[in-house]
Image (tube, rainbow, N blue to C red; front, top):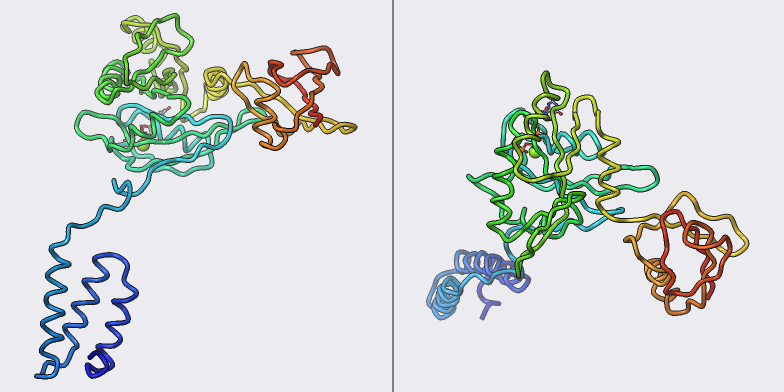
Length: 328
Ligand SMILES: Nc1nc2c(ncn2[C@@H]2O[C@H](COP(=O)(O)OP(=O)(O)OP(=O)(O)O)[C@@H](O)[C@H]2O)c(=O)[nH]1
Ligand SMILES: [Mg+2]
């Protein structure tokens, strides 16, 4: 029938055949209806097109898998993923802009960030992945922000020295409303675990320490806090505190660096492997390659966890700075 309907119709019909989504199909069908010559010979075809269009219009729009807007998942890179969490205008984007090569929007007004921006922050021979996020505030929080926080290895709770207390309370309340709890890294504080909640290690990053009176304000904040928090005072302007911030991040991630060497060669001291503290030779082998882990016979270690050159088995617990030679 379509051969009698003219070349324009055949073109539209070809588009319909290629169409994948409901919208594409509708557009193509409507185009077919528009271009089909209307006369006695095409009456049935026109009626058929109208039926197909109205059927398709009534079809519920199929949700794409996980269609909550574009995916905001940030793949982990480097020695640990750090989510920058806090109230508006606290200096989150400024920190990511100053400490990494990423270029998030920084603005003197609140609510300036609407997307997640990752950037790598170098520390000695490793790098952390910082993730700039939109702010947490009672007016509005993008729902995917909480998913990124749940997936991160560590939270920097970023507060401005100008109004740290309100920001701290509001941020913790908003996180709690989504069943996310913060454990105060480095503090002797029992956080009672609740079933179904996610807990994240966190410490405070207090920005604006270059501002007049900041030291006094920090002392006042410390006095007014109801429970202890580890905090790193910094300035995004002068980068004072950046080194301490990187060290605290390394410590809070609870990681160690180990280096590998091939038999008869010098160790590769440029590119450490980062592993959770307490990891074993077997865990290292697994990280290098599954096959290596499967074939592992023993390893020789130079470094704090053994006598130089000592042969150890897969279960041997490694320590920061170990050099490991794997034998398969
Ligand atoms: N003097 C000074 N100003 C800062 C510092 N950190 C941030 N600022 C300023 O504070 C304002 C807000 O900084 P942003 O980095 O955009 O803050 P944010 O937390 O990303 O804000 P939202 O994206 O709205 O949540 C900007 O004008 C920054 O220049 C700091 O350490 N010292
Ligand atoms: Mg921002």
